[in-house]
Length: 472
Image (cartoon, rainbow, N blue to C red; front, side, top):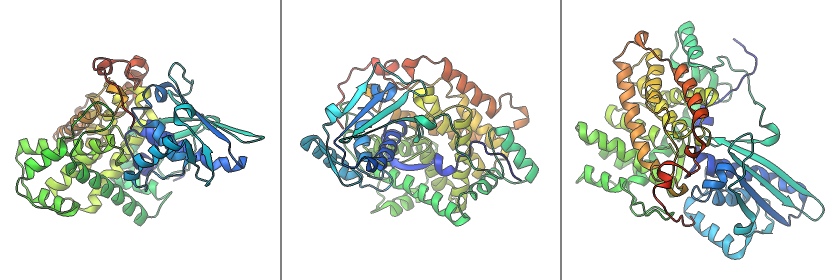
């Protein structure tokens, strides 16, 4: 089977390893600055660099560490592998010396207070998350505009209307197409997705890559469950996951991630404790995310705790295999790509329904798949989860990904588990709403939503709780 090129999204585009707190405001600008730094070699000796932030990037950029990400990107730091513990010291040195060392090795005068300009009253037409970087040399200048379109995806202005695609054996734009492939081939959703993934990678690379994604998620949960303190930024938010973890494991002893997971698996929880554990896992990830920790964009950083929480619940409560973990991620990744194609993954475009809502739908689908659901039930689970997030606003207090973002991850995880269980007990033939209909509805809701509720911190809770945001 062959097809003409359409938008082709890999599961590894949906799940990206990076640094918090935001995929659109941190990871996206970071990658944009990396791209720009790579082009600076064309200029020879760079004399100055100025960065202009527009729209939502300007309005909540400080709270989302956009300025920090841009500096690290210009330096050539890789968000996938860099030592996050070194970030505060590196940024402090740039601020003190007013010099930045580019990826090429050359040092350039750079005062962040002057060279990163926040144009809060200006927006560019293609997307609310826009930035322009200008580098000047003695006789030439380089200027590029980038759009961070959600989930860590970045496009340059010159290519904003282009769709870079490859031909997949099973091109999927809608849930209906996915179900049709499953019916015609008698294959499961993860099997169909795997056949598409083979366009980019061998089977062993798919498996090892997704298990690395899971290991990174689990590392993040463990760090969050074993780290106490107050989150940076000025809100004074106290980390809660470690206390929850310690209270529920009682006298258990552990020394590392694996022994902690073993203690967790051996600890048989009742119904109430299961709910607390799921909340604990989600809180742990997003407390790490708020602390510039390493997380997996799933499909965004602001919603990074939902899928790890549901997957950790699945592993601890059901003892699943590595292959089932891979199937979970293949399934949930495909659901995420359907939302990206049919709606948006950007809170600046669609509010928090585009983050927590999508991640909850993805998690519900993955859980339903591994627990034995049919392909129709899997899509039903995703639809149920999103249906009950429609209209969710993005109103981060102080522009920080903390209140109400951290708790929303716990709520999204619990809703995902509920949605999967409802779907497993239902006959999809009796459903009145399809996944495609709810994706379309989400997009229309996004278009209708007032701009104040789209990651601007100019509406909702953000204006009820005044705060002075400190530098990260």
